[in-house]
Image (cartoon, rainbow, N blue to C red):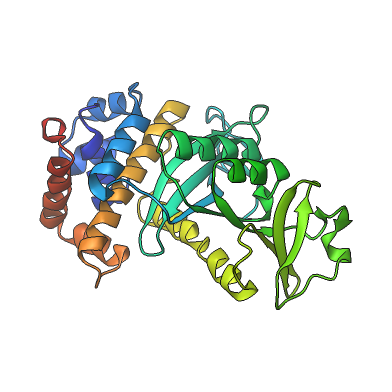
Length: 318
């Protein structure tokens, strides 16, 4: 594993900037060492899976949330593999890196598990979401989950895959989607009960309307109110995005190479795991309060980060 990864993570947590020059000056870290770390080839996914299992154990049940986020680079055109793509959250086309992410949550803690980088001309975001679902089921071995996603990912092939993998789903669905060969907007979709129907003429699902929005699920035993409550759990992934961007400086990497951008993302994800684990030990504090404590008191922050390095069995790399 690259030697300076945890020094870099300390920079994410305790520095205003994450450039190699800033980290070298503030923490007396080798400038060239940080630069080499950001271009190193290493099986990051295997490392990340090991970390999740050591910190949180084997995951099962719970909810899987799919969504995408954008690392905006509006003032640069030289970033490798950056492109224009539509951001559903910003409701506009944005230049930068677009990433599809899948998280697991039990309603209390939320853990990012895997992600795929969108590149124009290759896989669509929907196809990337399908690859993530297959990875979670077969590589991570997570069973018996409810998959939550917005209407952007409510394609028939995604729903078909979810049911094939043995998962249930709860999602928002566009009003022009055909159910029983009729558009939802033209059906008398109730508010107080679920309407049974088939998507693409073959996928059994249940629908209801809440004001001008439509929802679909494979869980026939629930009431519309219960389904709506489950769908709101999807917001957990937005909380992950906000913490990564506002606290861990996910968008602040100015390296042009895509390899460096990917390693920066992994570093942010590892730092997030550390904060999430720390918060489970200190439930009276939010992750933001823990971050503020570590940022102000550099000694406490360094000691806690070193503690997790030892917990993960990576002391030789600290």
